[in-house]
Image: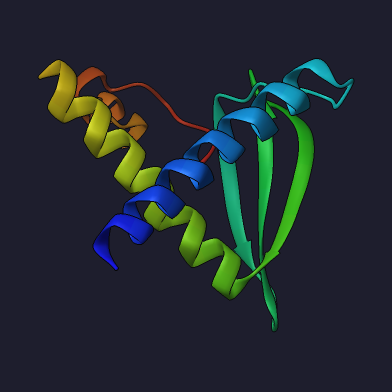
Length: 106
């Protein structure tokens, strides 16, 4: 049973890699952002993405999707920090240390 689980995990990782490659090569818009605003609705969560102080798009998602996104992003960043030995600073941390005025939450 354990070998089957490992095999399925490997297949899933390969599938994810293939999907990312297709998305990047397939004409889907790629949006860069360096700030964001999070808001709540009665049944969903939204994120306004911003690049250099200008709104670029809005993401809407269910609470379940939002929580899953938070967990997966957190795991990805933790993994990066552990492997590189380099903690990533948050915008809030930089703002406190540098006294930079911030227009969006992060």
